[in-house]
Length: 453
Ligand SMILES: Cc1cc2nc3c(=O)[nH]c(=O)nc-3n(C[C@H](O)[C@H](O)[C@H](O)COP(=O)(O)OP(=O)(O)OC[C@H]3O[C@@H](n4cnc5c(N)ncnc54)[C@H](O)[C@@H]3O)c2cc1C
Image (cartoon, rainbow, N blue to C red; front, side, top):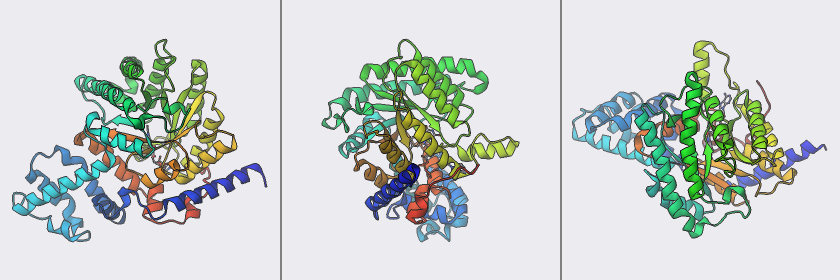
C-alpha cells in the first residue's frame, strides 16, 4: 500500500468517527422544530417558494409598516402558500389593513428576526458579549465580523471604520479578563489573545473599485492601518476577508502594504483569505506565502472555497466571459485539498486556518497535518456561527481549535448576509444539505474529490 493510500484510509476512518460523533444531532438551520428549519425544508423542496421567500427576507427591513409587509407577503407567498403550510395559507391574500394581515406581518417579521438571530450574534459588540462568552465556555474561539455591505458614501465608510474601532475597545476592555479567555490550546498562535476580528475591506471605502485601484489601495491601507493600530493596542488578531474577483486584487495588495509596513511588520499572524474555487488560487496562495517569507514574520491564511460562485458564474455567462472560477463543485473540493497540503507544508511561515463545514475537507486537512507531524497547536479550523454546531463540537472535542466566524449588526445589513447563508445551505451542491437534509450515505460524503475542470 503506498503512502497516499494510507492517508486516504486514515481520512475515511477519521471522517466516519466524526459522523458517529454528530449522530442524530442537526444544526439549528436544519432542525424542523425551528422556523428556520421549516423554511429551509420548504425552500429545498419548492424552488419557487425559495426564490420568493428569500426576496421577501431581503426586502423586509426596508418595509416601514404592517400594511407594506402584508402587501409583500401577498405578492411573494400567495402562489406557493397552498403547498406549504396551513399557517402560511391563512396569512396570504388578505386586505393589507385587515387585522389578520397585521397579525401575519408581525409573525413574518418575528420569524425572520429569529432566523437572523441564528446566524448573527447581536446588534452591537456589547450585545454580543454574552454569546461570545458562551462560545468560549464551550471551548470554541471566535472571530467577530461587523456586518456591512458596500458603503455608498464616505460618511458611511467612515462610520464603518469607527464601528470596528469601537468594537475593539469594547472587546479589549472586557474579554481578556474573563476566566474563559485563557488559551483553549496552549502555545497555539491563534490563542495568544481571545480577541479576533474579521474585516470586510471593500466596505471601508465608498470608491473601492478595480478601475480606481491605486487610490483604493491607498485609502484602504490608511483605514485598515487605523484598525490594526487599535488591534495592536488591545492585543487583538485580524483576518481580512476575501470578496469577489474584482475586489480581491485590491484586498490582497492592501493587506500586503499594511502588514509589511514598519508599523505592522511585527503584527502577530495577520490573516488573509484564499478561495479554492478560483482557478488562480494556487498562484494566489504561493504569492501570499512568498509575502510572508519576505515579511520575516508569519501570517495566517484562512482557506475557504469561496462565497461568490453563483454571482460570478452568472455574470461570466451573461457577458460570455471565461469564468475565473471552477465550474464543478468537485473541482473546488479537490483544489481545497491540494491547497490544504501546500499550507500545512508551509508551516514555517503560515498559520493554516481551514474554513469549511465539509467533514471530508476538514478530515483531509487534519489527517494530512498529522501525517506531516503537525499537532493541533499548528493550525485551526473555522466555521460560521449558527451553521454547523454539531460539526464544530465534533472537531473541537477531538482536540482541534475551532474558531467560529461571528457576525454582529443590525437587521438591514444583516439581511444580505442571512440570504447568502440561506442560499448556501439550500444549494444542490451544499455539503450541509447533503448531510442533514438529503441524508446522503457517509461513503459518498467522504469520497475523495477529483479535479474535473
Ligand atoms: C469561517 C469562515 C469564513 C469565511 N470567510 C469567507 C471569506 O472571507 N470570503 C469568501 O468568499 N467566503 C468565505 N467563507 C464562505 C466559504 O467560502 C464557503 O462559501 C462556505 O464555507 C461553504 O463551503 P464549505 O466547504 O463549508 O461547504 P461545501 O458544501 O463543501 O462547499 C460549497 C462551496 O463549493 C463551491 N461550489 C459550489 N458549487 C460549485 C460549482 N458548481 N463549481 C465550483 N465550485 C462550487 C462554492 O465555493 C460553495 O460555497 C467563509 C466560511 C467560513 C466557514
